[in-house]
Image 1 (cartoon, one colour):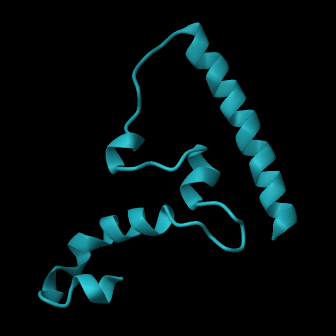
Image 2: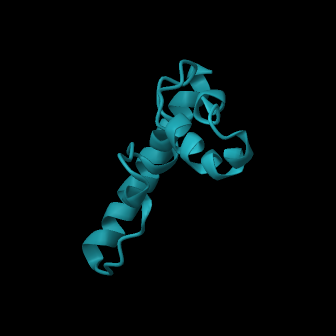
Length: 83
């Protein structure tokens, strides 16, 4: 992917790495059958702005955090078994 993007100007390849990493992390990995983003964050972001933190503090958000942590632990266990 990097080769395709730098064909016109090979001196700017370092500037493209974050974009390529973001694209790579959104693709389903054949070994784990999930995207790297889904394994870490529980969702697949459409844009980098989807990764910005939401600054809302309340009881519901804390409960969602515990549910997300439980889901991620179960997902990681499932992926370890699959690998």
